[in-house]
Amino acid sequence: MQVEPVLLYILGVVIMVIGLVLSIALHELGHFVPAKLFGVKVGQFMVGFGRTIFSRTRGETEYGFKAIPLGGYISMAGMYPPAKEGGRARTASTGFFQTLVQDARSASAETITAGDEHRTFYRLPIFKRIIIMLGGPFMNLLIAIVLYAVVLCGFGINQLSTTVGSVSECVLPATSERQECEPGDAAAPGAAAGLLPGDEIVAMNGTAIDSWEQATAIIRDSAGEPITTGILRDGESRDITITPSLTERYQLDDLGEIATDASGTPITQEVGFVGIGAALETVRQPVSAVLPAVGDNIVRVGEIILNLPQRMIDIANAAFGSAERDPNGPMSVVGVGRVAGEIASLDTLSIADRASSLIGILASLNVALLVFNLVPLLPLDGGHVAGALWEGIRRFFAKLFGRKDPGPVDTARLVPITLVVVALMGAMSLLLIYADIVKPIDFF
Image: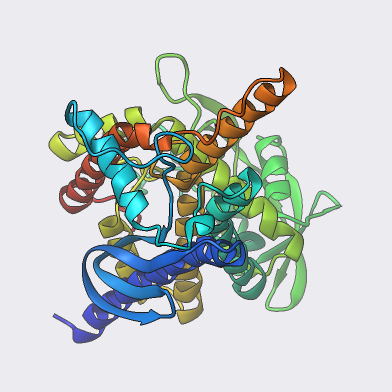
């Protein structure tokens, strides 16, 4: 076994872990800074969960790292209001769930020291609470934008060029069971015309070619018709004549994927075929491409979350059955680490391409943290935002109709639901980790 690929694999995993920890820390910083600016007492700033492995107290806040770096939190005084405005947390128990609610109120009350009653989270104006809770996701958004800018504008992305990258020897229909040429197979029009890898296509039938898609469109519409093709080979211009053959090819949808009919059967069509493939070139993108790229990623993550129940069923079928994993589906930190390690150890990629890919993964992770934390369920940030908005709505209508101020929303009552959400998140995480071990997604 070669040592260098193993070391590079480990390095890729370590880079991803460090990037994830930093992303979590900056997410919590997004909560911490506005909380301090608004005067809220913050007792803890922690990255990770479980046992504390390192901490230092500065001023009134304890900063530290915990054993499991899969999240983080800041502890603000008075996250939950008392049962009644100005009341004290009750300690009597009437049932299991009521005990959970009371324990949450008691724990919240214990964070409020004498003289700091005005520095509690629940006493803040609603807009300040929303700013604090959106600070974390907003920080993930900023990180994603910066990392996408580095990838797109600094490194660039691979795009199809107008240079020929490959030339097929023969013509095989898309439905052919074999993929290798045999004696007697008809020669592909590109090879028959003398096209070679490295030739740059500059014109077809007098039309200047600016993109590979443009050349492909002309070829597909010109079956049986000769195309006078201008090429550059070794810096010299020359013209060759290519006559595309009519062959069967899969029809693609708007996303570039194979289209299927109502029964799921791939749709084919007869089009002109030359038998050439484009070479890739790295092209730096303008700054204007960054925000649309981040937006597209947000939409993709949002679609995954909206269809999460079905996706988890599919993952379970893949993990415990013979189904394949969806390469566009969710992965655990184990899966992300494995992909990072494989990218770092690929000797077919340049160092720049490996670095760009790892940065792109971190950017996508931050988008995932952004969108997931906006889900309006406690204990996620979106749950606290939803509680604050509901409180604002109640107070607005109370004022509108001249009623008594209803006071803060008793979010402690949602603690049992919060525990259910946490349990479901834990179960999904365990399933994803198991699937990423026994049936990992294969990108390579």
